[in-house]
Length: 182
Ligand code: HEM
Image 1: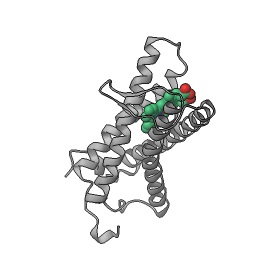
Image 2: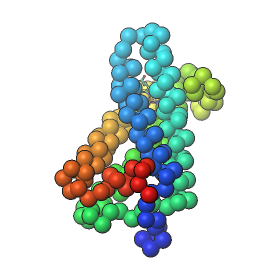
Image 3: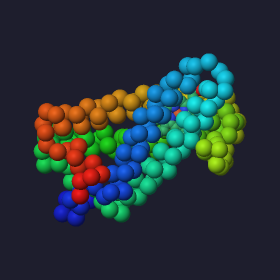
């Protein structure tokens, strides 16, 4: 999108999707790391169910986010960014959006390969995407794990940049994403 037709601010919808997704992912990643390292039992099963259900919610929100970006557009990067910061922020944002689609899809695929149902908050069950296969499950689980840690690194970079802009550069970059600002 060229700069002259960009909106001056993020749409309200984009902002709400951003913060709900942030909250969910900040529960999903530590929860995912914890759940596979805890004792087997009812509590572990419940955390697995929540992990999958929140993950599917993130998947749906990712499509809504992409649709909101297409419909309402996204504002140009802040004028206060250096050329490096501009390139880095666009790269991190695009990688995170891609992972918001790829991670749930990998989770859904691997759970299908393991032949466990993906029940979304007990409300409905997603169809299996592929036949049962242990080797494919192992490969997908390893990819899900690696990309989960890549995603955690990108999120820490993203949060670190927001802190730097708020407390060191004080240039209002974080405020652009706050729901209160019009
Ligand atoms: C944004 C979405 C998601 C993120 C960021 C995410 C992240 C993670 C992380 C960090 C782990 C722990 C990996 C490890 O330490 O070995 C994990 C495990 C797991 N996730 Fe997800 N996940 C997401 C969505 C999903 C979805 C939608 C499903 C299923 C429908 C799913 C199924 C699983 C399963 C079954 C495991 C355990 C894998 C194993 O047994 O090794 N995840 N996830």
